[in-house]
Amino acid sequence: MSKIKTDTVKSITRDFIGRDLDPGREHQLSENLSLLIKSIDKATERLPFESEPIGFTSILEKYAEEK
Amino acid sequence: MNSKEILNRNIISLVESLKSREIKVSEVTEASIIRSEEMQKKLNCYISFDFDKAMDKAKSFDNEKNKEGKLFGIPMAHKDMYYRKGRVSTCGSKIRKNWVADKTSTVLSRLDTEGALDIGTLNMAEFATGATGHNEHWGNCRNPWNNEHITGGSSSGSGSSVGARAVFASLGSDTGGSVRLPAAACGVVGLKPTHGLISRYGIMPLSYSMDTVGPLTRTVKDNARITDVISGYDQEDTTTSNRQHKNFEEFCGKDISNLRIGLPNSYFFEIATNEIKEKINEVIKVFQGLNVEIVEVDLPDMHLITNLSNIVFPTEACAIHSKWLSERSDEYQIQVRTRYEPGLYIPGHKYIQALDMRPYLLDQFIQKSLKNVDAMIVPGMPFAVPRIDETDVAAGEKMADTIASISWCTRPTNYLGIPALSVPCGFTENGLPTAFQLTGRPFSEGLLYQIAHAYQTETVWHEKSPS
Image 1: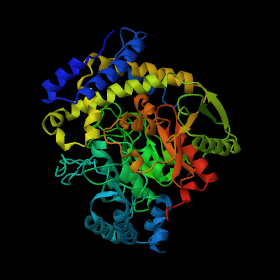
Image 2: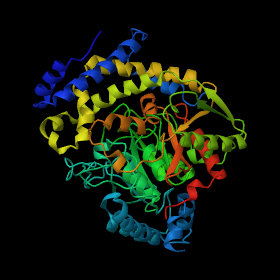
Image 3: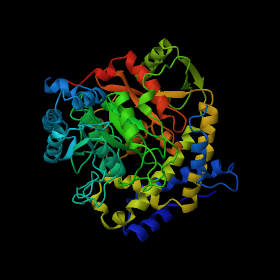
Image 4: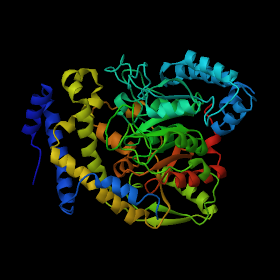
C-alpha cells in the first residue's frame, strides 16, 4: 500500500521550497494525500494495462452529442 | 431611452438597435461606464478601467457606415487574466501586479472582430484560485444583490459586474466552478464549456487539464451568441477540437417537448439544503409543464471523481507556480499557496494515473447517467449564498470543507470535461439568487442552451435586477 509519510512531506518541502511547514500541516498533508493515493490505487486496479491520458479526447469526440 | 433602460436591454436586441442607429454606441458605452464607476465603489468588481479607449472606439463605431458584427458596440469587461497585448494582466495577484501581456488572447481577438468593446479588467480570486470572491491583494469583490454576501469565485468580478448591470457580458474561467459559482450567486447565466470547445490561448493557466473559458450574461440567448463568437478550433491552442461548431443561438427557441432530463439520485443532493431541493423541484415543475420527461438517473462514484480532480488540480497548479512558490511564497495569499502545496508531494505516476482514469470515468458517466437522457439537472450552489464573513476562512481548519462544499456540484464536470450551464432559478430566503445547472454529453452546448432558453421563456428570474 503506497502512502506519503510525514517525513517525506518534510523532506520535499525543504528540498523544493527551502523552508519548513508547520508540524501540524505536515501531518495533515501526509494523511490527506495518503487517502487520495489509496483511492487512486483502488480505482486503477480496473484500468487496462494500455491506458493513457490521451484516450480522454477520443472519448469526448466519441460521445459528442450522440444519445 | 434612459441609461437604466439601456443597461437592462439584452445583447441581441441592443445590437439591432445599435445597427439601426436607433441608439448610439457612445450612449450605451457612457451608460455602462457611469454605472461601472458607481458599482465599483460598492462592489469592487474592477481591477482596472479602459474607459477612454472604449469611448474612442465607441465614437468611431458611431461614425462608421457599415455597422457589422454579432456584438457590435456592446460594452463588456473580462476577468483580469485574459491577455491583451500591452496591457497589465494582474491575474488578481500581487506577483503579477505590473506584468504586461505580450500577446492578445484568441477569445478577446474574436470578440473584438465582432465589435465588442472592452471597458476594463475585472476582479478575480488570486490566480483564479478561490470559490468565494475573497482577494487580499485587490480587496474582496461583493455581491450586487447584497454586498455583505460573497460573489462566488473565482470569476468574482465577472458575476458581480454582469449582475449589477454594469456590463452586458463578461468572460470568466472555470477549473472547478469558477464561472458557474459567480453566475449562480449573482443571478446570471454562466457556461462551463466542453473541454476543447473554446481556445485558452493567451489566458493565465491554472490546471491545464481542467481549465475552460466561459461567458457570463443575463440571458441564455446572449450567452449562446457569445459562445458562437469565441468557440471553435484555434491553431494556437492544440487542445481545441477541430469539429465544426454549431450555431448555438439557433437552438434557442427550438421545442423541448419530449426531451428527457435526468435527475441524479445521489451525490449532487447529498449536502443540498431543503431550500435548494425545493428550488430544484420548482424548476422540474416548469420543465414538466413543457412536456419534458424527468427521469431518475444513477451516477458512478462521484467521490472518486472529486478525489481524482484533487490530485490533478494541485499537481498542475504546482507545476505552473513552482518557481514562485519557491522564491516568492510570501506574496501569495495563504489560502492560495496552501491549495497548491499538495502538488509538491504527489508522485508523478499517481498524477498520470489520475489522468488515465479520466477517459474511463467519462465513459462510465455517460453510459450510466446520460445514456437515456438528453441532459441532467443538478443544483448550482448546494445552499444559499453565504456572507463574506462566514466564508473568511483563509487557510484555517474550515478551508477545505468550505471550498469543497461551495463547489460540491460544480467540480466533477471539469474532471469529466463535459459542458454545464448555470441558470438562475429564483431567490433563497436571504434574498440572494440561486441557480440550477444543466449538464450533458460532450459538445452538447446547443442542446443545453435550447433547454435553458425554454426555461427562461417560462420564468422571469433573468429579468430581475438588483436595486
